[in-house]
Each structure stands twice: as C-alpha cells, then as structure tokens.
Length: 420
Image (tube, rainbow, N blue to C red; front, side, top):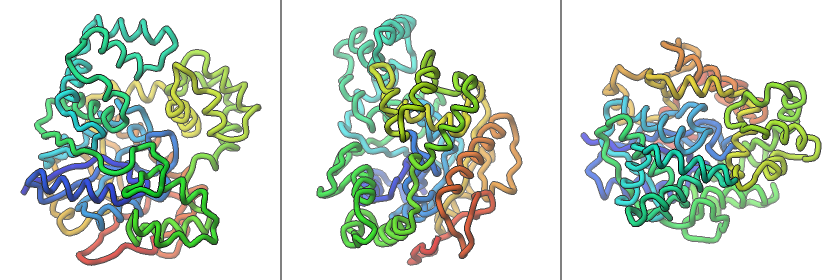
C-alpha cells in the first residue's frame, strides 16, 4: 500500500489544503496520507493561529490518515532548516513513497536543477554568494543572483522568489543529502498565493483567512464565510477561540520579549539568526516600538527580510541560541516526531514505521536517546509552555498549561472532532 506525505503548517487548515490531498491521490497511486505539520509555532516567526491538535484533527477529517509534529527547532526557522528537518523525519519513517508539495510554478525541472547546484555548491558559488551578501542584499536574494550569474540558462532561477518553490528546492536538496528514495511530486498551487490577503477568492490563502478573522468584530458571525473556505468544524473552532480571545499570535508576547531583551542584553548576540550588530539595533529599538510587528519592521533591511527579523525575535523569546542550532546542524542522529492525530489507517501506519526513529505518543513518557533529542525536547517544551501561557486551551474541560500530558487525537470513521 503506497503512502504519500505532505509537509504543512495548516495555519489554519482550508479548502486549498483539501484540494492538494485530493489531487495527490489522482496523480499518484497512494492510498494513505501522512502529514508532517508544524506544531504551535510557524516558519514566519509567529505562533500558530489555532492549536496544533485542532489543526491536525481538521487535517484528518480533510483527508489525512496520520498527522505528526515537526519539532520547534525546525518548524520556526529558515526554509533550509525547515525542509531538512522535515525530510529527515519522513525519510527515516521508512514508509513514505511520495512527498507531495504545492508549487506556484510547478517547474520540477528547474527545481531539480537548482537543488542540485545548491547541494553540490561549488567554491565559486560560495564565494559569489558571500560577495553579494556583503553588498547588503539578503541571503536568499544573493543566492539567486549568484546562480543567475554563474549558471545562466541552466534553470528558471526566477522561481526562487516564490515561497512554495523555495521550499520545494530545499526539499529536493535535503533528498540529495539523505540519498532518499522518496519520490517528489509537485502539484500546481490552486487559488490565492501564499501571501495574498484577498479573502473574496475561490480558495483564499491562510494569510487571507487569518486577516479576515483578525479584522472582524467578535459580534460578526462570519460562520458561513469561514465554513466555505475552511471546514465546518474548523470554522466553529476558530470563531469560538476568537470570541474567547484565544487565537494564537506572537504579538501578545511583546512585554515578555521586552523584559528578556532588557534583562539579558549582553546575551542577545548569542541567539540564533542574530547577525553582527543586530543585537545593538534590537536593544535600541525595543524602547522605541510598541509591538513585535513594529520592531521587526525596524530590523528589516536589504540584508534581513521581515520574516527573518520575526524569527530572530521568536528565537529571543524562546532562548534558542547559536550553539544549540550548531549542534543540531552537525548531528548525525535521527530527529524524533510526535503523533498529533490519526484514524484507523494511521494506526496501522504507525505499526509499520522504522525503528530508526523515535515516535512520541505522550511527551511526559518520552526519554531522549541522544543529545539531539535533548535539544529538541528542551525547546519544544519552552515553546509549548509559552504558547499555552496565553492561549486558553482546554481538553476534557480542563485548562491546559503544557501539552506534555496530552495524548494524540483519534478520529474514527465518520467522527467529527470537537470540544478540544
């Protein structure tokens, strides 16, 4: 029985995500779908809009059979770290035949060619990227310009400016590094673009959905509109959380961030992604700004993208330092993953997984097998407890302040998740 995998955030799960699952079944012979999903933090340097168990449960109802969690140290970082961590987990599960991903351009030939050039990265390319970065250009743009200069006409390098194509390239590069036999399948993205904020389209993006909900008054029903673009259970859950003031955002943590920066001013330079001189800028601007978005805009420059600036601030909040990420990068151990939601097919899939990878059922019962696991666990716990400090999450009627004791969500055939 063939298995297809998707790497996702589902922030929140919507009809475009359901379309990708339906399409991958059409273009492959896969009968089962495993999703590797970001936990309660996402790549753009933010906390997830809705809780990971709600998003995972919606994914199972939307067509997935098993949803696993990507640890914080991967899911809240650059495309390279995000992709390498995710592909590593899927590779070592030992049951994935296809990795399916949405793409703006769907140009697999260029994706493969660019991934290969980056995987082999010649000394000439390395030096050219460094030289361009020194002119004040961001690393992603410098990499694209260097490739265009050194390897003209070998690929359509313009796709490197599209978010999903950037991830696609990094997925393929990770496959080269792991010598993985998983077959990549690119599916053209349908509907609004990743950053498109227009809600009134056939398939609005997650960005547009978040914006629409955030801008609507709590007495605005929004129910039918959200049902049409997400799913009925997800729409109900989003509105319930909105009305209770419980939708996740890192903006709610500005006071905590400010306190950390003031108290640990000399240690900020040791935080991952904080470049030379940026620590001084952050310490100065923290007094002149009143929110995380505003502070990130002050950090943003030709060299540092807005998203990278937000990741810097998230790393400060969680305390993720350069030493820890250096050890993760150098480690040859296999990362762990955690079960978030599953159905009957998913239960069978779990029995077939390779023994090479640790799969967590309940974190309170997990014992790290190596230093990599210890690092991942440390920051998963910090990020989780920060999230639930503000996000009022209940399970079985009780307020949860940590997800260490939370079991995976089982969804039987025809069942709907609710009251998480």
